[in-house]
Length: 338
Image (tube, rainbow, N blue to C red; front, top):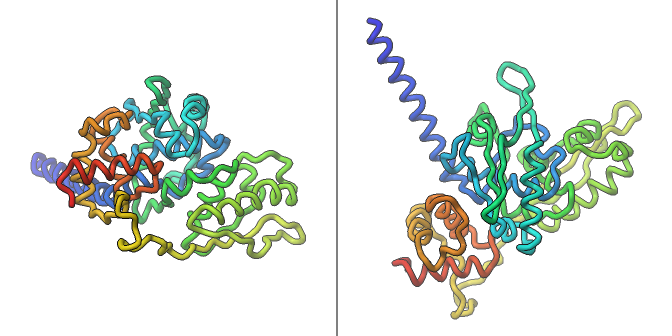
């Protein structure tokens, strides 16, 4: 009887784990490395981080989600990838990436666990810099949070390409809050709460300072460069005291600006092939092993390089145009893709 119960228990665990793995695989297919996906329970997501630290975090977390990296294993972000993704000079990228890797080691975030207790956790357990980039070692807690998404653990998602366009100090934080509240049509920006969560100077508790130095510049950049627009809604008051704003979030109409085939320059590589997921998986696995593209790789193995190539096949605008052209040229000339 004991052995039977034990075997049933093992079978139950196996089926449960298989179900979890299937959900994870489905999730990875839906949101590959060109998406940033973060559980909503994580508070103070970018607290105290410089812009370059936020960029490093945004580049590293999709690899944590889409690969089987474990605690004690690293994710490598090269200076060339950092420069390309953030549209900065490669020389600047080396310095910025090293400093960001050093500083993010001291950062932490908080989340509320199922028992109601608020936990504080370091983002990374270790970092190393060399070989043209930074190695990031996420903790077990972080890896679990970056990979667990379901009805019990709701999440916020956005395209990596979109958020990395933002250059102002607080635009990225405001954009993250806006995407979190987009399905509800907006979010409440409470001054006292955000002074703490965004690690703002105390002088920003004065409404005019907050509005002119944080909100107005961030709104302007987000409205210009991203997929959403923000505008002020009703003031939030406690008695007579103005304690915040309700911020309205609206999605911009989908762009229909792609040229029709007949209007395209026939000498230009077609960057909009509309590949299926199966084609992306097939051809990224082939392209990652081509000598013609080997200089683009700073990744630790072919599968990780293939994921990066796959994200470009899916969204050519996620990298510099010359990089995308090289990959699509190789797709047309070095594979059987037609």
